[in-house]
Amino acid sequence: MNQRERIVELITDSGLDRVKQSLIELLADSVRLNSEPCPDDEIGIGSSKLGGCPDLPVGVEWPTYGGRPLNLIAQLNLADVQPYEPAQRLPREGFLSFFYDALEQPWGFDPQDKGRFKVIYSEPGLQLQRLPEPEELSEQGNFGAMRLSSQLDTTFPSIDTIEVVQLDLNVDEDELYWELTDQIAGSKDETLIHRMFGHPDTIQNAMQLECQLVTNGIYCGTSDGYDDARAAELAPGSSDWKLLLQVDSEEGIGTIWGIDGRLYFWIREQDLAARNFDHVWVIQQCT
Image 1 (cartoon, rainbow, N blue to C red):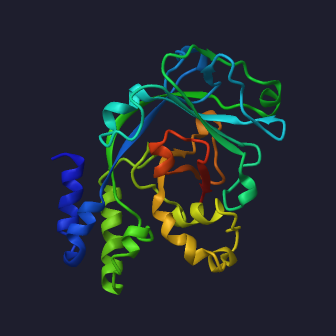
Image 2 (image 1 turned 30 degrees about the vertical axis):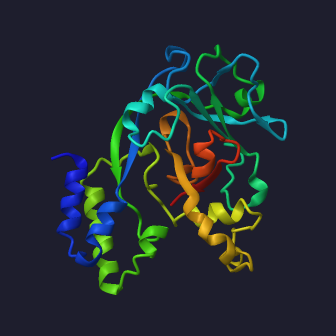
Protein backbone atom coordinates (compact mmCIF):
# COMPACT_ATOMS: atom_id res chain seq x y z
CA MET A 1 0.00 0.00 0.00
CA ASN A 2 1.52 3.32 -1.04
CA GLN A 3 1.22 6.56 0.90
CA ARG A 4 -1.80 7.92 -0.99
CA GLU A 5 -3.67 4.64 -0.59
CA ARG A 6 -2.93 4.65 3.14
CA ILE A 7 -4.30 8.20 3.52
CA VAL A 8 -7.41 7.30 1.50
CA GLU A 9 -7.95 4.37 3.85
CA LEU A 10 -7.67 6.68 6.88
CA ILE A 11 -10.18 9.10 5.33
CA THR A 12 -12.58 6.25 4.54
CA ASP A 13 -12.42 4.99 8.14
CA SER A 14 -12.58 8.46 9.73
CA GLY A 15 -16.35 8.72 10.15
CA LEU A 16 -16.45 11.78 7.90
CA ASP A 17 -18.86 10.05 5.54
CA ARG A 18 -20.63 13.21 4.30
CA VAL A 19 -17.42 14.76 2.98
CA LYS A 20 -15.32 11.63 2.45
CA GLN A 21 -15.16 11.90 -1.33
CA SER A 22 -14.46 15.63 -1.19
CA LEU A 23 -11.53 15.03 1.17
CA ILE A 24 -10.08 12.36 -1.09
CA GLU A 25 -10.30 14.79 -4.01
CA LEU A 26 -8.46 17.42 -1.93
CA LEU A 27 -5.38 15.21 -1.54
CA ALA A 28 -2.53 16.95 -3.35
CA ASP A 29 0.75 15.63 -4.72
CA SER A 30 3.89 17.31 -3.44
CA VAL A 31 7.61 17.03 -4.09
CA ARG A 32 9.24 16.17 -0.78
CA LEU A 33 12.79 17.53 -0.57
CA ASN A 34 15.12 15.46 1.59
CA SER A 35 18.19 17.21 2.97
CA GLU A 36 21.67 15.82 3.62
CA PRO A 37 24.55 17.83 5.15
CA CYS A 38 27.30 18.53 2.64
CA PRO A 39 29.95 21.25 2.31
CA ASP A 40 28.95 23.75 -0.35
CA ASP A 41 32.18 23.25 -2.30
CA GLU A 42 31.35 19.54 -2.63
CA ILE A 43 27.96 20.26 -4.19
CA GLY A 44 28.22 20.55 -7.96
CA ILE A 45 27.28 23.76 -9.75
CA GLY A 46 23.61 23.61 -10.70
CA SER A 47 22.74 20.95 -8.11
CA SER A 48 19.72 21.19 -5.82
CA LYS A 49 20.62 22.38 -2.33
CA LEU A 50 19.69 24.40 0.72
CA GLY A 51 21.85 27.36 1.71
CA GLY A 52 25.37 28.07 0.56
CA CYS A 53 26.17 30.38 -2.35
CA PRO A 54 23.98 30.59 -5.46
CA ASP A 55 24.76 29.30 -8.93
CA LEU A 56 23.44 32.00 -11.27
CA PRO A 57 23.86 32.72 -14.98
CA VAL A 58 26.87 34.79 -15.93
CA GLY A 59 25.92 38.46 -15.61
CA VAL A 60 23.20 37.93 -12.98
CA GLU A 61 24.13 39.55 -9.69
CA TRP A 62 23.44 38.36 -6.16
CA PRO A 63 20.08 39.96 -5.24
CA THR A 64 20.03 42.61 -2.53
CA TYR A 65 17.56 44.62 -0.48
CA GLY A 66 18.48 48.02 0.90
CA GLY A 67 22.07 47.45 -0.16
CA ARG A 68 22.34 44.17 1.78
CA PRO A 69 22.62 40.78 0.04
CA LEU A 70 19.71 38.41 0.58
CA ASN A 71 20.49 34.89 1.78
CA LEU A 72 20.16 31.95 -0.57
CA ILE A 73 17.53 29.70 0.99
CA ALA A 74 17.28 27.02 -1.66
CA GLN A 75 18.41 26.27 -5.19
CA LEU A 76 16.48 23.70 -7.22
CA ASN A 77 17.51 22.01 -10.43
CA LEU A 78 14.13 21.45 -12.08
CA ALA A 79 15.37 18.32 -13.83
CA ASP A 80 15.68 16.78 -10.33
CA VAL A 81 12.15 17.82 -9.39
CA GLN A 82 10.31 17.06 -12.64
CA PRO A 83 9.97 13.25 -12.24
CA TYR A 84 8.13 13.74 -8.93
CA GLU A 85 5.83 16.56 -10.06
CA PRO A 86 3.00 14.81 -11.96
CA ALA A 87 1.05 18.01 -12.65
CA GLN A 88 4.00 19.34 -14.68
CA ARG A 89 3.53 22.92 -13.46
CA LEU A 90 7.23 23.70 -13.75
CA PRO A 91 9.54 23.80 -16.76
CA ARG A 92 11.23 20.44 -17.33
CA GLU A 93 14.65 22.06 -17.05
CA GLY A 94 16.22 25.17 -15.62
CA PHE A 95 16.82 26.38 -12.09
CA LEU A 96 14.92 28.18 -9.35
CA SER A 97 16.87 30.15 -6.75
CA PHE A 98 15.05 31.30 -3.61
CA PHE A 99 16.36 34.27 -1.60
CA TYR A 100 15.17 35.80 1.69
CA ASP A 101 16.21 38.53 4.11
CA ALA A 102 17.40 36.20 6.86
CA LEU A 103 18.76 39.07 8.96
CA GLU A 104 15.43 40.86 9.42
CA GLN A 105 13.25 37.76 8.82
CA PRO A 106 10.07 39.51 7.60
CA TRP A 107 6.83 37.72 8.50
CA GLY A 108 5.11 38.62 5.25
CA PHE A 109 2.06 40.33 6.74
CA ASP A 110 3.21 43.81 5.70
CA PRO A 111 3.00 45.04 2.08
CA GLN A 112 6.30 46.83 2.76
CA ASP A 113 8.01 43.43 2.98
CA LYS A 114 8.07 43.42 -0.81
CA GLY A 115 11.65 43.12 -2.03
CA ARG A 116 12.88 41.29 1.07
CA PHE A 117 12.63 37.99 -0.81
CA LYS A 118 13.16 37.01 -4.41
CA VAL A 119 12.90 34.00 -6.70
CA ILE A 120 15.05 33.82 -9.82
CA TYR A 121 14.28 31.43 -12.68
CA SER A 122 17.32 30.60 -14.80
CA GLU A 123 16.52 29.04 -18.16
CA PRO A 124 18.33 25.87 -19.25
CA GLY A 125 21.38 26.24 -21.44
CA LEU A 126 22.74 29.32 -19.69
CA GLN A 127 26.25 29.16 -18.26
CA LEU A 128 26.07 29.11 -14.47
CA GLN A 129 28.72 30.32 -12.08
CA ARG A 130 28.88 30.06 -8.30
CA LEU A 131 28.97 33.56 -6.89
CA PRO A 132 31.46 34.27 -4.09
CA GLU A 133 30.03 35.06 -0.69
CA PRO A 134 29.58 38.83 -0.24
CA GLU A 135 31.54 40.41 2.59
CA GLU A 136 28.31 41.55 4.28
CA LEU A 137 27.06 37.95 4.51
CA SER A 138 30.40 36.76 5.82
CA GLU A 139 30.10 39.29 8.65
CA GLN A 140 26.51 38.44 9.61
CA GLY A 141 26.98 34.73 8.97
CA ASN A 142 25.91 32.98 5.80
CA PHE A 143 24.23 29.57 5.90
CA GLY A 144 25.93 26.25 5.50
CA ALA A 145 24.73 23.96 2.73
CA MET A 146 22.74 20.74 2.40
CA ARG A 147 22.31 18.58 -0.65
CA LEU A 148 18.67 17.96 -1.69
CA SER A 149 17.02 14.91 -3.23
CA SER A 150 13.37 14.57 -4.27
CA GLN A 151 10.54 12.10 -3.79
CA LEU A 152 6.78 12.07 -4.35
CA ASP A 153 4.64 12.90 -1.32
CA THR A 154 0.89 13.19 -0.69
CA THR A 155 -0.46 16.07 1.39
CA PHE A 156 -3.71 16.68 3.27
CA PRO A 157 -5.16 20.17 3.88
CA SER A 158 -5.39 21.83 7.29
CA ILE A 159 -8.86 22.49 8.65
CA ASP A 160 -8.78 26.24 7.94
CA THR A 161 -7.78 25.85 4.29
CA ILE A 162 -10.22 27.56 1.93
CA GLU A 163 -11.37 24.29 0.36
CA VAL A 164 -12.08 22.69 3.75
CA VAL A 165 -13.90 25.76 5.09
CA GLN A 166 -16.18 25.51 2.06
CA LEU A 167 -17.23 22.01 3.19
CA ASP A 168 -18.99 23.67 6.17
CA LEU A 169 -18.08 21.00 8.71
CA ASN A 170 -20.27 20.79 11.80
CA VAL A 171 -18.92 20.55 15.35
CA ASP A 172 -18.71 16.75 15.35
CA GLU A 173 -17.06 16.72 11.94
CA ASP A 174 -14.56 19.31 13.14
CA GLU A 175 -13.47 16.97 15.92
CA LEU A 176 -13.22 14.01 13.54
CA TYR A 177 -11.18 16.12 11.12
CA TRP A 178 -8.64 16.99 13.81
CA GLU A 179 -8.37 13.30 14.72
CA LEU A 180 -7.87 12.40 11.07
CA THR A 181 -5.19 15.05 10.67
CA ASP A 182 -3.29 13.59 13.64
CA GLN A 183 -3.59 10.07 12.20
CA ILE A 184 -2.26 11.15 8.82
CA ALA A 185 0.64 13.01 10.42
CA GLY A 186 1.43 9.95 12.51
CA SER A 187 1.60 7.78 9.39
CA LYS A 188 4.36 9.92 7.85
CA ASP A 189 7.88 11.03 8.69
CA GLU A 190 7.23 14.63 9.74
CA THR A 191 10.57 15.49 11.37
CA LEU A 192 11.77 18.16 8.95
CA ILE A 193 9.54 19.06 6.06
CA HIS A 194 10.86 20.76 2.95
CA ARG A 195 8.52 20.53 -0.02
CA MET A 196 7.32 21.99 -3.29
CA PHE A 197 3.61 22.23 -4.07
CA GLY A 198 0.84 20.38 -2.28
CA HIS A 199 -0.76 21.61 0.93
CA PRO A 200 1.55 23.43 3.36
CA ASP A 201 2.36 22.02 6.78
CA THR A 202 1.03 25.04 8.63
CA ILE A 203 2.22 26.01 12.10
CA GLN A 204 -0.30 28.80 12.61
CA ASN A 205 -3.10 29.62 10.14
CA ALA A 206 -3.91 29.16 6.46
CA MET A 207 -2.01 31.67 4.34
CA GLN A 208 -3.78 32.09 0.99
CA LEU A 209 -6.05 34.93 2.10
CA GLU A 210 -3.12 36.66 3.79
CA CYS A 211 -1.10 36.49 0.56
CA GLN A 212 -4.01 37.88 -1.41
CA LEU A 213 -4.66 40.80 0.92
CA VAL A 214 -1.05 41.78 1.59
CA THR A 215 -0.08 41.73 -2.09
CA ASN A 216 -3.00 44.07 -2.71
CA GLY A 217 -1.69 46.57 -0.18
CA ILE A 218 -3.55 45.55 2.98
CA TYR A 219 -1.55 45.23 6.21
CA CYS A 220 -2.42 41.94 7.94
CA GLY A 221 -0.31 42.20 11.09
CA THR A 222 -3.55 42.68 13.04
CA SER A 223 -7.11 41.49 12.50
CA ASP A 224 -8.00 44.93 11.12
CA GLY A 225 -6.65 43.92 7.72
CA TYR A 226 -9.17 41.11 7.39
CA ASP A 227 -11.96 43.58 8.22
CA ASP A 228 -10.77 46.05 5.59
CA ALA A 229 -13.50 47.26 3.25
CA ARG A 230 -11.70 45.65 0.29
CA ALA A 231 -11.13 42.26 1.94
CA ALA A 232 -14.43 40.68 0.87
CA GLU A 233 -13.92 41.85 -2.71
CA LEU A 234 -10.39 40.46 -2.84
CA ALA A 235 -11.09 37.18 -1.02
CA PRO A 236 -12.16 35.10 -4.08
CA GLY A 237 -8.66 35.57 -5.49
CA SER A 238 -7.20 33.72 -2.49
CA SER A 239 -7.68 30.40 -4.25
CA ASP A 240 -5.22 31.52 -6.95
CA TRP A 241 -2.34 31.27 -4.48
CA LYS A 242 -0.43 27.99 -4.47
CA LEU A 243 2.46 26.80 -2.35
CA LEU A 244 5.66 26.92 -4.40
CA LEU A 245 8.18 26.02 -1.70
CA GLN A 246 8.14 25.27 2.02
CA VAL A 247 11.44 25.33 3.90
CA ASP A 248 11.79 24.08 7.46
CA SER A 249 14.33 25.20 10.06
CA GLU A 250 17.66 23.37 9.76
CA GLU A 251 19.69 24.06 12.89
CA GLY A 252 22.74 22.30 11.47
CA ILE A 253 23.29 24.96 8.80
CA GLY A 254 21.88 27.92 10.74
CA THR A 255 18.54 28.32 8.98
CA ILE A 256 16.34 28.98 12.00
CA TRP A 257 13.02 30.71 11.30
CA GLY A 258 11.77 32.19 14.56
CA ILE A 259 11.26 29.30 16.98
CA ASP A 260 11.08 26.02 15.05
CA GLY A 261 9.51 27.91 12.17
CA ARG A 262 9.12 27.54 8.43
CA LEU A 263 9.21 29.75 5.36
CA TYR A 264 6.46 29.42 2.77
CA PHE A 265 6.98 30.79 -0.74
CA TRP A 266 3.61 31.35 -2.45
CA ILE A 267 2.80 32.06 -6.10
CA ARG A 268 -0.39 32.76 -8.02
CA GLU A 269 -1.18 29.93 -10.42
CA GLN A 270 -1.48 32.45 -13.28
CA ASP A 271 2.08 33.62 -12.62
CA LEU A 272 3.33 30.05 -12.37
CA ALA A 273 1.77 29.18 -15.73
CA ALA A 274 3.44 32.27 -17.24
CA ARG A 275 6.83 31.37 -15.67
CA ASN A 276 6.68 34.71 -13.86
CA PHE A 277 8.33 34.46 -10.45
CA ASP A 278 8.53 38.20 -9.82
CA HIS A 279 5.47 38.31 -7.58
CA VAL A 280 6.18 35.39 -5.25
CA TRP A 281 5.23 36.19 -1.65
CA VAL A 282 6.80 34.73 1.50
CA ILE A 283 5.12 34.03 4.84
CA GLN A 284 7.06 32.98 7.94
CA GLN A 285 5.33 30.97 10.67
CA CYS A 286 6.74 29.58 13.90
CA THR A 287 5.61 28.12 17.21
